[in-house]
Image: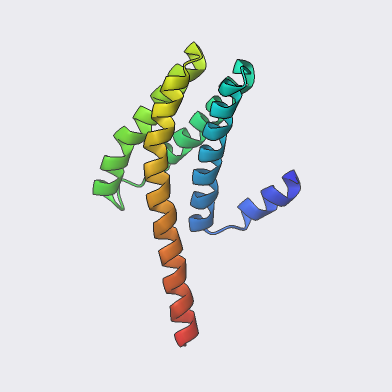
Length: 129
């Protein structure tokens, strides 16, 4: 499975990589929430930490030179999510996790919808040729 995923990532378009990162962060945040609900704080902290790693990567790859307004708007949101996730990890704080998840879901859903529309537009252009 890891070899398949590694191959998929290495051959993926930037849009597909963004989709994988967004979905991965959401999955780890939801996993952390479920683990907290089940009383498994060690596993919850691990999942929240992995989500924080992904959001940190998303933040680090913002292209201020290409989209200064978008990057400028996203940076403080990503920082907030990362700080809430780290607070969750350090303090077993499910509320902080919920704040991070709620905030990140909004961003992820918007990006995923935009990626879907872009893919549909590309498909329509290809069909018209």
